[in-house]
Length: 267
Image (cartoon, rainbow, N blue to C red; front, side):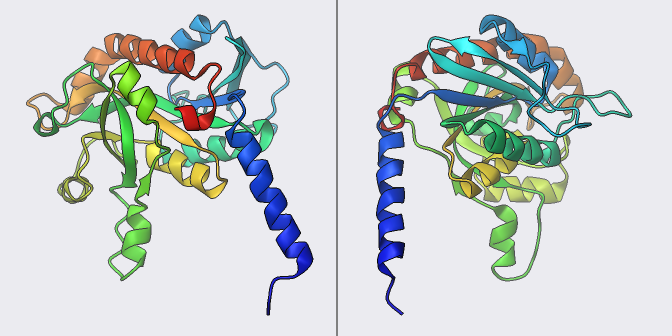
């Protein structure tokens, strides 16, 4: 059956609206950050305030900091602390939930997932390096059935920002995501298959939701630990967290400054 006139009109209207959104300056940004330690320096830098009347469902621990910085409506979303254990709600489940809720409530033009990550020295990563992810994928969703295996990996190219990458002289690498801080032999094989330079616990989940709801997303990750090094990951992560967070916050500030006044295609 041929598309009706109404269907064609709706499609033209949608394409026209999408074009208008692409060609106006970016207005609203949502920054998803898993840990409070990573979030608070940026909250202070951008002079944001915690939302007293949450836009999120009652009872969830998610926190929104918001304000205006360089004519941008900035929203930092931190998944908060586990209501029982009091630790940061890290991992893919919280990341996907807060990304979905933030998009629904705030209708951002762009999502930034910022955070720390492990890096591979074999791929050129060093402690304190800041990477912009080129691709994201999962490494711990193993479904050895044809096509389901591809779904499990969930490989996605992120929103391309060639001008930002060049002008800010950031490193670029592929990001692999899983729900464990350590790395099992099975995870290692999947990470190698993903050709990843950096490894985190949120990125691919944020990318999945952003792609589902058609919101451009970029990923800024700072290296706290060398996964293929000679130190235990947890020990090295805690040792370097404060210093690397400072590098992350500087990079995120530079990116936000760069975005101010620009349209999406200009990135």
